[in-house]
Image 1: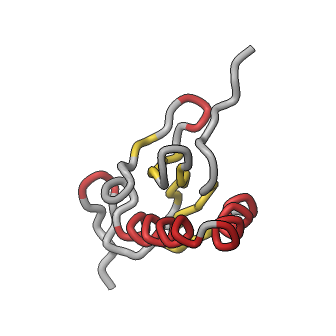
Image 2: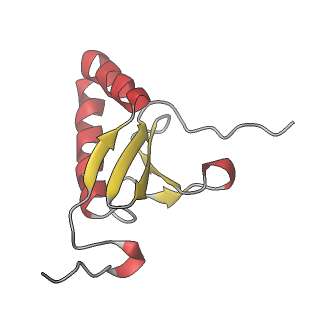
Length: 105
């Protein structure tokens, strides 16, 4: 069986597995209860990220500094979907509020 060949920007022809962190599950449950439109938007962003992790909807951008390795997509002006791709898995980190790096002292 031939192996998947990476495409541009590290995308793979092989589908990614999806894993939600506990924080992301809590965030998504909040949106399902309080604003189903945002929950639907998150569903769309996640579906797009599974197909195209580094391009597509929500203006994907790599995060820097302490969050290097994570990517962000815009849910709204205030909220972001943060995720990382590792070993064929798309890990959803958060989907509520804006990501924040730890402040240096």
